[in-house]
Length: 377
Image (cartoon, rainbow, N blue to C red):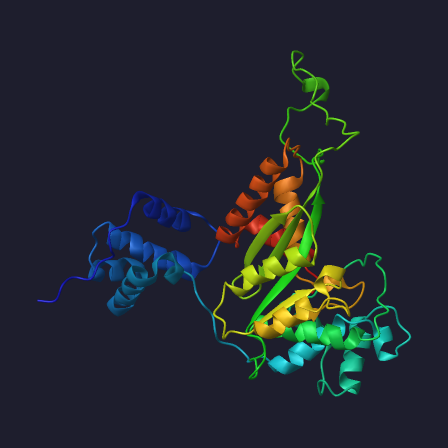
């Protein structure tokens, strides 16, 4: 005799979660019905009886129970895959995203910004797409994570190789994002590297929970603490060498007392040890002098050639292309805002512990919001 089909043993937390799904009045009806079937099975009701109560077939009940035993709560939520296929191919979507993030003046157009009308007309005129509606363009940009934002002022790059450097960095990002398959000899792993600092021992403004002032405040409450004055800072500074692995979504960092070519190469050697020697790496960094190969010092170029590494430089005054800048925004928010570290040892320890936490909680909602808001590349 075949064994009776029933749901696996569920704990109290899972039972309460099933009850919440059933009792709330919003959400998918499909999810609600599946949760009802699982809860009835957990209460010992046989499949035939559940089919009568839920007005469905016994085979359907068995499928829902088997899926829950295998995939857990993920099986309760529908994964819709029907509907019309995407109109535009992946290369077309990448080209549209690339053009909309550029400026109209780069294409010899007398406009300071793109509108949906101008962008749609330009895409058709350039042969990127045969035809595209304004609403279709709006939906495509939303799916690609591109929004219309207020632009802050920054120095315009006068780098004569601006187009070539920017195109190379964007191509490396496409490889890291899985949009482009690397050809033979191209990097398989992409790091974004930069220095963060100088790290001073000074109070940083921030926010914290405190009692409300005004009419309803406690009369016995003392005055709120003020930030101490730091007229002299005799303890020097520190610098954080940080790298962001785009494929693994991990942050790495070393804190040094100075930032020169020697310290830069030490950190690069550490990054090289994270992958086998046969895996070609790319390191995206800015044009800060310790990163460069000069007429007097060829150490960076010699090391990169000997260790199967490509150093990709962002254009001059275009460090915003480096994706690690968004990670620094989150680091500043979580670690430095509202702090007053007494020593560099305490400050460095907090930064190291934040990097460990960040790598274990890369999908934290607040972290992702800060990074996505600051990320422009």
